[in-house]
Image (cartoon, rainbow, N blue to C red; front, side):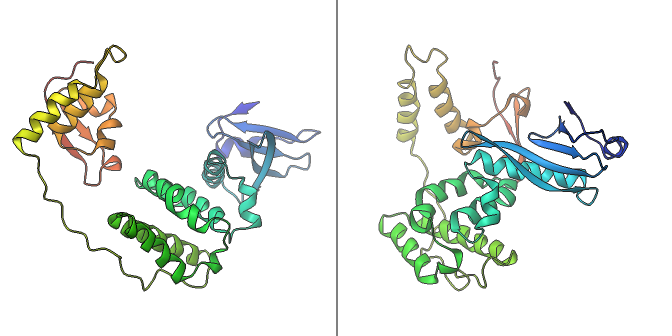
Amino acid sequence: MSKTFTALGIDKIKPASSRSEIADADTKGLYLIVQPSGVKSFAVRYRHREKTVKYTLGRYPKLTLSEARQAAREVMSLVERGIDPKDIKKTPERFEIAFHEFLARHVSQNRSQYEVERQLKHDLLPAFEGMLLTDITKRDIIKLLDKAVDRGANVMANRLLATLRKFFSWALARDLVADNPCSTLEPPSKEQPRDRILSHQEIKLLWHSAACLSDNNDPSKAYERYFKFLLLCGQRRTEVAEMRWEELDENTWHLPAARSKKQECKKPFGTINR
């Protein structure tokens, strides 16, 4: 049984002779549990390691419907990353558990999520997985940054420091650590504004090379058109790759601010054939 919850609708639900569960049609995994005594509470049901798990959120109305829905989304976000939310209650001080919660509660709300997840997989987990937050020292972070610099990833070293500074600030606010080990660290590399432009010969070479990406397995010439469009519009590859039809208005591409490092912009271009 499922229904779209409203606060008024929940208030009107009468208890039955036995415990009942009603799924919220609006939010994946969220259930309202109604006891014969009339007590109502929210819980999330999900699957982890091939088992169905019940995660209790709290009683209604102390926990409001909107709060329950937000909490359920956070729980399901952790599950999708392979993390059992119950582990967060058990060991919130462990780096990977705390960082996944940081991703779900903070990073998932902004456009840097993909980049931070990539940093976690490529650099942060190999360095800190299994460690308690309180055991991670300033020296540990310097070693991580030095390793990135030594492999020639100077800008990435700066990005890693920025991510860890935000993460430990978040952990400090949640009383998971007593201080931020990144607070006095400076970016390991000085970044210079990029002023490199393609020469006419390079533009010509790229344009003709793009045509070589299409073959019989790609009758739509998707890759050829993708790289040529990148060249013509001057936008970042991810912004172009994630373009949606609803962003197009005749010959104008409305690039949403949520997917751009700059404010929302409009890009006029030639006729687009759907």
